[in-house]
Length: 568
Ligand SMILES: [Zn+2]
Image (cartoon, rainbow, N blue to C red; front, side):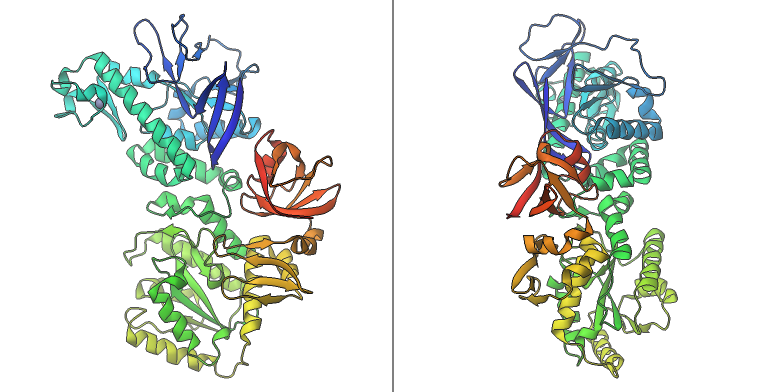
């Protein structure tokens, strides 16, 4: 038995299990086969204690009682790649214990073993179970439901007596000419199998595109227990989820539920704006602006109005734009290409709920305690101004009705011009360089960010800037990544910081990419998408982009870990 991971989406993954030369894609569902319940004919793997005439792999039922650690509810099968959750059904109902067990188990065994949770999988919870990191399930719940005359659908199960029509076109339902209440056990069971396996394929498609979180936020709403599991996961295991979450991505975050606010991408962005980012030192006037539906903001019509108004003043580069938005909180203009600032979508009604108000107020108060300005201009709709003005000392309000009305923009123009009087003119080039330094601080942390930009020259046009030192390019900002990509010279400049490094084995020169087994050691703070400094025998030999996080690079026995950009 051999297991390989092909794709990861946070804790969920697509893998390939090879059993007797047969390939089984995970996540997957073992189909129970007994005298009374025949296995689903579309299943890839059979679960049976009988001798079954099949060319599919057959797993045997767990022979209980197993010798289990009393504290642990699982059994690690040393001969196979499987870890079996023994009392999954009972545990699942106790959401906090369930999350604790699965996550701590995963931390212990790493991502290269398969977790099998018997009995619990249904079409309504399969995505959530994959999201917490479970890979294998079985069809027991389909059988239990059928015995109770319950039909599976994607959002839950319905008793046949409550169905006036059959809302299904599966091969079973399609060939039936009777009332739902007259369905036989076999018909219900086979329908349930179709529903469960349809969902399995759907979930695998979604994991491959990296959109599982958007999908489960929608799916958990069908059952309070599922919401509780997701909330427990977000609440108690943010650090673990954050480790698995890329810092560079082009996936869109759909912030359509209150659970979206707890996503690790969102919380990490907020934390880095407060703890890593620092404003360009030359700016003196803060301008608070609303967000736009279009991303990046500056590509929208409304932000083009704001930009033009700023550029029409006699000292535009002394003005710093900070966008107030939900669920991200605060987005400084220099970070608008950074993930997920350029990649989220939220329904806008103009009315802010109490959680959003509290989030914005807390972030803004902390931001203003760390980043000092001479004047703060608030060009925001009344819906936001009303709850933030109290935390700003002497706010100057410029929004009359809507932020883009002629009257408001005129007032903004006059106010900006008045506010900049008396300050020295800021050079455009100097401001550009400081903007890049602020971004570098967000990306690498303050020390490395400042070190990288110090004594450099910046060339190119927004946003495609190049960082040059002694005629050598250190790196460039790319719009698609929103981050600075380093050259070897750039890596050299920051290597003494001892961050973002990996040490590879000394017996090869990598080409194209570095696989995990070639990595001896790595900085565990590396996230997927980060720049990586490649060392061999403690000498810097190249730079690349992380495909795995630093912890996985150390632990994994296969898979691409770093895509090489430059090698010396
Ligand atoms: Zn059906």
